Amino acid sequence: MKILVDSHSHTVVSGHAYSTRMEMIQAAKNRGLEALALTEHAPEMPGACHEFYFQNYTVVPREVDGLHILMGVELNIMDEYGTVDLPAGVLKSMDLAIASIHGPCYGESRSRELNTQAYLNVMKNPYIHIIGHPDDGRFPIDYEKLVRGAKETNTLLEMNNSSLRPGGFRVNTEVNAKEILELCKKEGVYNTTGSDAHIDADAGEFSCIEKILQETDFPEELIATTSYEKFSRLIRQKG
Image (cartoon, rainbow, N blue to C red; front, side, top):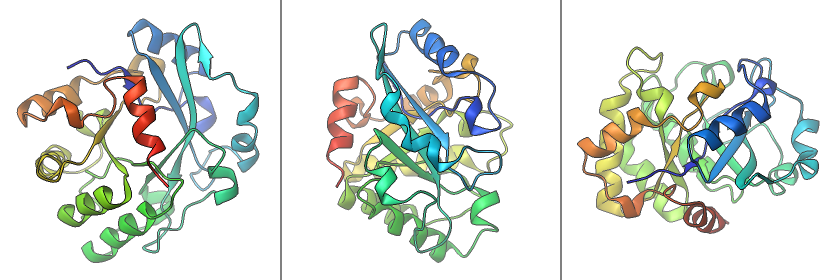
């Protein structure tokens, strides 16, 4: 299996990342990727950029020396109702939107039921394509309901390389990711691969994802990112 799309990465404008757009692009090219998604943190994340940044995406080229660039956002899920921190009018003009739970924005973990409801509600948003790092055990959820919700709404579930690194700050990620993958196999739900890179050295880095895909014998046909064409087709199915 060859992964050719990195669907989740950040540049300096996210506030706690370290590389520029062109540095990330060069790193992705060096790894032989077909496409890189630049998904900056949305405004409610401390240090992130203003809504105006996302409104100005029309000026950004979508291809650099043969590498496809998707200009997107990693939204913050704010509550159990699926509220996010950019309006639909901005989201509908973007190439890609991820929605994730982050402690600084969502606050303390709610009950398993309410955390699950947060994901299910946000997946109903027609402009959100991916659920980011749902493996984080700090925010327990019902994975059976998550996977069924993803299937019903044509939402991709993310395998996040940063989450799966040994010693990472997210909790119980490997066990949770394996549970998600087994359920996705059963239900025929697509997964996407995000490095969640915050520095160019990590752009297109999927070693931890590849390990867990091998350990679960996850079928290549359910990986959305084995080609740019396949990934583009799948995200267009949302809405």
